[in-house]
Image 1 (cartoon, rainbow, N blue to C red):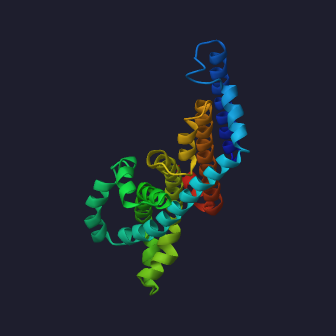
Image 2 (cartoon, rainbow, N blue to C red; image 1 turned 180 degrees about the vertical axis):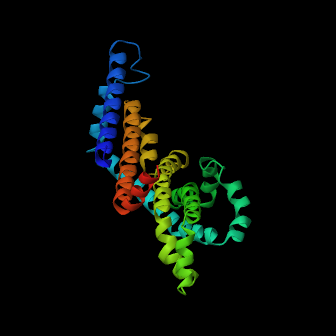
Image 3 (cartoon, one colour; image 1 turned 90 degrees about the vertical axis):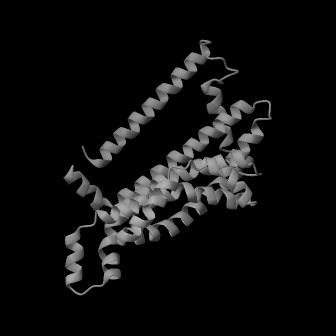
Length: 263
């Protein structure tokens, strides 16, 4: 089966599964198995979700969340990719930094939001800071791992022609590591969106999807709006992840083909 056919098949199966789940939830609600006061009908949630798509206030909050997401992710890439290349190129430096990385990486990023509130009075700076901390690890680790996967023969061949370490890094190591970096960025993108909304929920503020959810909780139809806003957060996650996957397929077709041959 070709890559495109496989992708279409996965999309179709995914859409079919989601549709079946929605129909099941709607049926359970109509049959009285689920209390509408606890969980509104699926049709009601979908209606609210569609209404939010043209709601100016909600779209403004989505734009605020995505601004923090974009800035945080760009900052993370700008810092962690060079750092990963440096650590991956210098084994002794990596060995020195590894204990610190292994200590910091398991710390839940959400648990640091109260500390970030004290350090960053500006809410945009706060969101960028927690996004940076949470999303730096997949990019950093993938960059370091990618350097280990570089063909040593290619590097030695270039060195034999008189190329220095920087030239070898630029001509061989970086292109070979790029697919791993792209995967790290894709993983970090999902983490960044989670942290952006979480920071808005826990730290408050006047804008963002999380802030909209907090405000919606005090309205008469708050539960419906909260769930609908959460659905849109999920949709944004799916869309951004799909865009990253599409970019990876276009930019690194050679890497996909090599992986397919190896498998």
